[in-house]
Amino acid sequence: MCRNLLRQYFQASCSPCSQNSYSHCGQEEGGGQSAMCVPVESVTFYQLCVTRLLDSKNPSLDTIKMQVYFDMNYTNREEFLEEHHRVLESRLGSVCREITDNRACGREELESLYRKVVSYVLLRSGLGSPTDIKVVREATAALQSVFPQAELGTFLTLSKKDKECQLKELTMIVTGIRLFNRDCGKGGEGIDDLPSILHEAIPVTTQHIDSQLQIAQEQAYRYTAILEKAVQNPLLSKELQPCMLKEALYNLRQYEIFLQIILSDIITCAREVEMMTKQLGAQLEQLKMTVKSKIAVPTSQVFPIFIALSSLWTSFQDETVLLSVLSNLTTHLEPFLGAHDLLFPEKVLQELLDGLTVKTDVCRLKEHIEERVHLVDFRKLEWLFPETTANFDKLLIQYRGFCAYTFAATDGLILPGNPAIGILKYKEKYYTFNNKDAAYSFSENPEKYIDLIKEKARKNAELIQLLELHHHFETLIPYSQMKDVDKHIKPITKCDSSTQTDTHILPPTIVRSYEWNEWELRRKAIKMANLRQKVTHSVQTDLSHMRRDNISQVYPLKNASTQSMREGSTRVPKPQIYIAGLRGGQTKVTHGVKINLTRAIDET
Image (cartoon, rainbow, N blue to C red; front, side, top):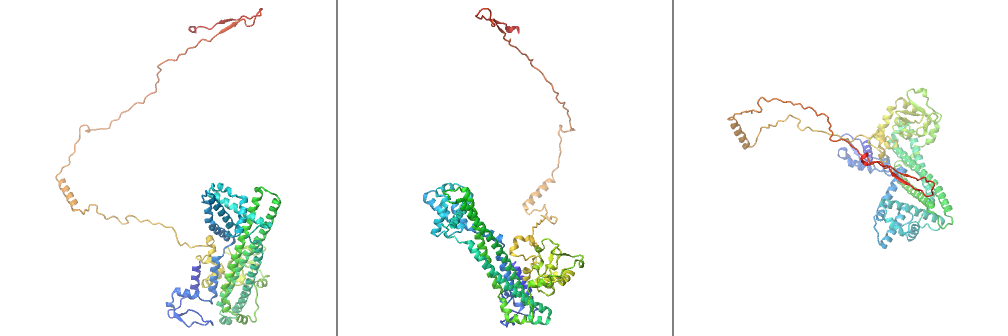
């Protein structure tokens, strides 16, 4: 994207001259022409690039440099924190592998492994330096309370993944213990008071950005007032060099937009810090109520609170790093405004502003707040108003909310649009205007003004980023949006293709009977000579003479059954034995008589 943007800038600002013309390679201190001129034919593209890049009095180039720097260094909150955690994990990877791949057996090896675990806990938590003896002792005591050295044997039997999970959990528990001890005044060596630091740093950073934003806006308002005067007075336009002034205005507006983005992130950071401070106090209070003066507390009650404290402190660390990055980004954007004092000193601006009224963006909105587009004047166009449109303030306005008509009609003057007048919806895109007349003029022929804006962006490449015209220039996609290329139309530069070539496109001309070997030719000649003296004979045997086809038919077998023996059975007689006299009689002694009535076997 950077290369294409610079190429677009060079093509726009350095159009080829005629063969006999000359190109100025620089400017003097007073703004006049350089004494050294060389023919255009001898100026190579690389020399032209170097000359333009070294130009310190070019607001357009400063704007492009600012856009490239911001695009390469700024990421949104979620992506930054994700990348920050990924970098921390990669840095701790070697220390973690030394612990998980360790096969300690002896006493000294186990003690060395335990010291590595303590160092890992300190490095991962970020609470103190592993080289500070007091910090190491405090961390070792906290670790021994939850993970004694005697449990290293069990730790070594775990799988590598389980070891990593346990190390992370131990780090969070030890971090929570140290934070609790610090709050109780019994420890906390090497632990910075991050909530207090953030509460002091955020207002200072916000105040600095607000002051820079106010200075940039006031300067932009003065440039806008001068350019409006130049549009109304053509004679002043010739003396003023409005193109350079417009480029300076673009530079300030782009700087203002970047500061607003950074300020929005810092405000979000302040809200997160405020919320986390309340949560930290609540967790510490709950932990104090749980522990009180007890000698022993169940781990199921305190470990979750320790882990919650560690997570909150990690969030404080993330906010600290994020605030530092945003502050550094703001500082590095300021040098891209250096050309303003050189090109437009304060004395010159005061002379140009003599008799002019400098209007702020808010004043311009209030001037036309009573104006409103009448729907009866537009039958085929759709207009949106605050009272009839849901989420009116969340609509994605084209050109960052600047007036489309004013920019096209005045050859690049940017004025803020007023949504209260009405937002034009044209081809699923939304446009705002500075006043009612601008809205009516743009609505007569929208395509004409859209094309004019596109042509202006081709001449001033910084407008592509400033006005978000990437959908008109498909090859230019911001670096921060490269992961989300679906939002832009990306030209097809590569495609999968396949070709197939026939083995022989033309009919074959190979002579199969050709022989290069003379001995093979001689053999064929002898064979043909011998064949001329031969006669072909045919014979037929008696068996094959008058031979015909024979057919035979076989009857299928029928089902039949035979019996070779007959069934027989025998029966053993049933025993029938009776005993008489069991009921007794007149005598006291019972006399029984056994009678066997079983029939003989031969009688059955």
